Figure 1 (tube, rainbow, N blue to C red):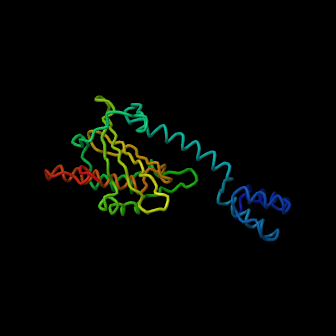
Figure 2: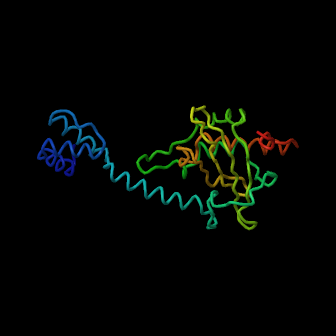
Figure 3: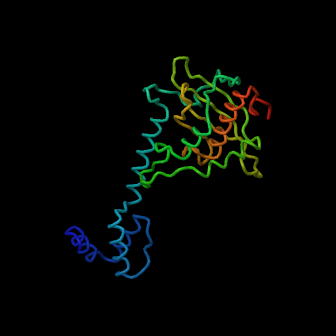
Length: 234
């Protein structure tokens, strides 16, 4: 049985002109073709789904983006971090201080992390399982120039950055991408990540994933007493 609100909205839709109905649908990114009864039916469906306007979604996404950017460079202890690009000096080629990072940590970040995958217009958490296949980029030596930065001796977190060769060759010879991750020094847990590729704001592009595989290899080789391939010239 329809609620009073639904009945009232149905009455409102009945009073709208075809132009007004199409504007209602257009504002929500929906198809505006069809006759008046079809438009009313489509509008009722959007109302029941709670579909917001594209402008409302854009505003909400911008707010979420600003909040997340603040979270990226603030540790759980409230320490304010510089962005990796702001740190110009003291990046260390010696990776002995890089926190231990296991395959389990990689899976937890790419698949189970919720803070990274939430979007205001998509209430479901989306994982990055497909990025688990980025191991091939690391194995094919796409990752090089891995560097460590402690930020400060007292800081609870550190940065690891790397250059990552584009996965697909292009005629204009793209520059290597700059990928980075922020790790807890004690646990190796990923606090944040990024890349200057088009998908980098999602914090889980192939280049970030390839860097994470490099961290797994660095940890494994450290335990074995052998050097990781990233320690060798590319």
